[in-house]
Image 1 (cartoon, rainbow, N blue to C red):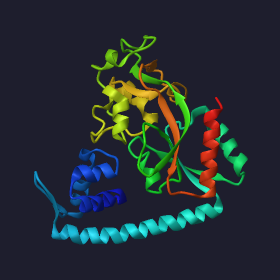
Image 2 (cartoon, rainbow, N blue to C red; image 1 turned 90 degrees about the vertical axis):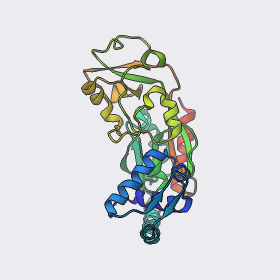
Image 3 (cartoon, rainbow, N blue to C red; image 1 turned 135 degrees about the horizontal axis):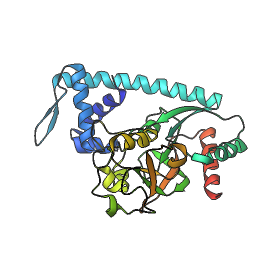
Image 4 (cartoon, helix red, strand yellow; image 1 turned 30 degrees about the horizontal axis):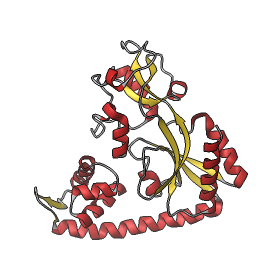
Length: 288
């Protein structure tokens, strides 16, 4: 069972409104509702009654929500115990979206170790849909993510800015373009990619279509191969041409807002190790 879905169900029980509950987790109501429906199917019972005007808990839903709160309290307690143990060991779980900081990763680690040489990292892969929630829910201590605006509960330190590109099939009429605009490609078929935040959808422009579909792509590394296979186009950052080269696609500069890469940590995380990472990132942002 997905712990995240249980958290969603508890929030919905508190709000009794899909829009408000989804907003608290910074996702759109449609995918939020699909998580609730999937949970109900897994449990084989209806947890909520929905009408056009109201949402109410069923008796079975009220029982499950009480049990879910107990379970989530236990999970959070285990997470906190692990956080304290990790703090003692100075090992931070680092979640990385795609190529992360690209060529500047060694610069960041050097700056971190300048503050405390005993800090070490374990690695976890993030995806486009969970990049913020992974940090908020304590699955990772630090996240290297795409920044598009504030997210409740997180602190962002700017690390890197790079131009965005559109990934097109090599056989596409756009493949030989020096530069494209959103108007040039707005009518093209876009590869559905999962997006974690409404602001990320706004940043993506026409590429946001299909971002909440069940088959939306979640991993940046898979985008070039998917473009080559499907003939659709997709957004990426300029470094993708070096980290994910593919003979059957081209990476063409695209006008519009650049890709902002940031280091995300929890607002409430006041450990010495986290403070060292924040300071090191700020130093990295000042050194070009």
